[in-house]
Image (cartoon, rainbow over all chains, first blue to last red; front, top):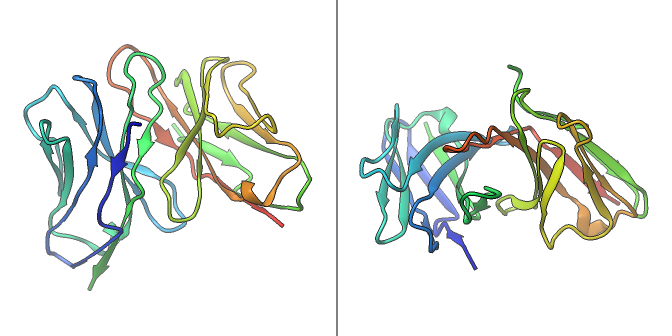
Length: 116
Length: 115
């Protein structure tokens, strides 16, 4: 079964510091996409960052960047200069099949707390 | 572009009743997905549409669940004879499938509580 594993149920970080959330996945595909979504308390899920597996370069979006290790099937999210508004559940996800339905398989999430 | 919207945002019902949820996707998006999220878990796929065609259903989608997207725009998800185990957040997402990378955009969800 294709799975996504987020091994850190909870993480905390001090405001302005850096935190890394881990994610591993299992796929037999060679070309695929990976996603990090953020779900603030009682608010909707929003896309944080996306990585194309065929790209060597790690994706970056402002304070958010990924460390993508294709051979290790690892896709971690680094948040720099953490802000109070970053507090949320973070989900790693990918579509196990390409070319048809791109339904997403999600990890169980990591709850991030940002301490002032 | 107002994003993906879902109604109602909250629904409380008694066991055995039928409920219907609506999702309005981003207007130009041709794909629409339904997911279910229980407490402490990530979303799980239920079903998806490309335009008006329902192309895949998860084994999670029992015969009490039915979804439609009649004109390829909004979608409804109906649960008949609700059970307490149906209590969850029901999320809708839409995307534009144009042969390249596809990103799903989520609505705020409908939180269902079955008493």
